[in-house]
Image (tube, rainbow, N blue to C red):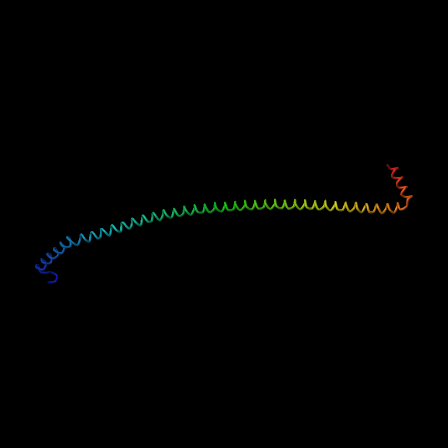
Length: 161
């Protein structure tokens, strides 16, 4: 039972050593340990605050990104609409120019056809006149081949006048 009941001298020295160690720890060890724990608590709190601020900033950036994306889509739609309008205007102008050019070509062709037709008719009339004169000359020569027929014809013309 000696182990269960230590000697009083041993108990005394153990108490004194414990008091000295406790005093040294209380004087030098515990302030360092508590300051380290407080620093760690402060660092953890600062990290949590920085994480909260970063999360808020990230949320703000996400909202800003969505806003910019919406503006970009709006701008894209506007540019596409302007491009489509410009394309339609260019197509309309090209069609109108093509119609005007076609009208001009048709008018020129009609005028040229009319001029060629008039020239052909004039040429045909001239040839018909030449042929008529030639036929009339031959008929008159045949009918007026004798002097007597020539006198009869001259008398008839005078009577008609």
